[in-house]
Image (tube, rainbow, N blue to C red):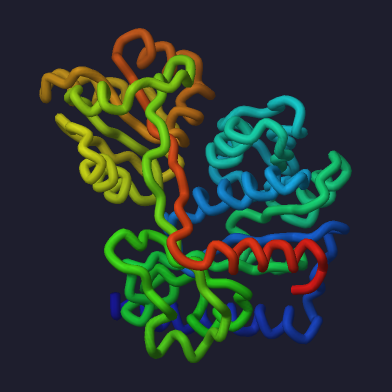
Length: 347
């Protein structure tokens, strides 16, 4: 919106001053005591960052490392540093720790997951719990914690040159901030794999790039997480709903993978479900004569944090959720090598 452009210029100037202060040492970066891998983005909204975080955590665990994931824990009910998982047991649910941290903790029980507004504090707690590498989720703008590898996720379907800085657009920082990136990760490459950043953007960043997409990995019962036949679920007429950053991508993926959708409902990202939402879901199921419900893994983690809401859905409907599998379609060796060098202090 043109009326917001003056505010966007002011915001860009403020971000430029802040970044300059970090670059020259006026604002100090702090060491975690172990290597730090940051996965972030340049825009607000869903870019496919969380699946890549999970891929990297899985890779680190398979390599014999003890990773910790740290993040803010967006829209959690708690304040300060909260241990979601100490790598041995879950210590906080989605309400107290945030939905994405809780999802990662459920998926990787051996991983340490800590949330905190101050990433430096969260990292220090993670190290005391035994972490030998820290994965910082949504970390590109959080520069107080020094990182060994800075990965920036960019949605390959979006035109960065056509966007503007907040509040006029969706850019968190000017495009020139890409100079800090060590690695660019293009997401959502279903319709083509970009070889490089678009002209006009590539002059800001000489970093190598990878490209990835994700598929539905498994379909599971929401009640107990048991895997079920995806083919059987595809034959059912289901209402798909989600409260994630990119609901359209979720629905498009379901349709591309031949799931039959009777209807769909979109809720805000990180939405905390309540009684009115249950009424809307009930009305939609009835109106479309649906056989049941289908949602995302993140939504189920959030729903289970409210026992009354979960009980209402689980006891009333046939209810499933999907898990995500990441496929690195270009640059898998580049990604693994970058992580190895960062851990060895060579980045």
